[in-house]
Length: 260
Image 1: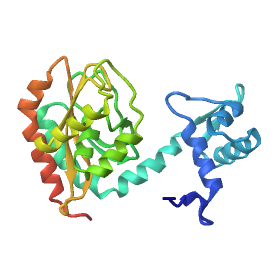
Image 2: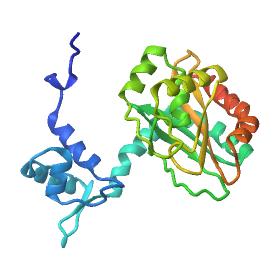
Image 3: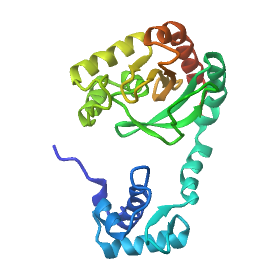
């Protein structure tokens, strides 16, 4: 069965896609790039990249170093994400509950939403204690090896969950990362039964995660909330015993709120 490619629609603007591709090419792995590097990263010609980088520089989204001729992002790029956060009713309504959970457990609490096969942090209340891992709002993490992702997957219909697992790149980030699809589906099934998911040092060493799916009043899964626990203070068992019900209760409280 053939599926319609929305990019083939006459309404689709290829120039906009290419301009955004230039912005997305720059990031943690490639903080600065010259024209040939951007062309290679985006699959565009150097002349096309030159037009887009010039336009984005004029608009204030890129800066060009006068000596190295290398481009980097500017703070104006934050406007794009900040506008989303300001307009997001879920973040607005969830924040008081996340703050309360953060105070009760003393550890970092996050709200994440799905995007493709990733979960994206859209709200974060960090621990006041020492934390070794910096995870800012906007950070993307794979669904398959994170508690937030598994919590979200556990609330989806079986066929949708299966398609997302099949589409995921099952990278072995740490020795603990589960990459076997059958084992992943068992963990997701366990999360569905328990009402929360867990991951034990599967994306970062030293980081344990507990997460609960966030459901709307209509039963639609919106995302997940998670608690990040450093192994210097917690074990998976102690986290599950002391925090799981608190986490589930917070997720349910947020889910009772109507959309704005």
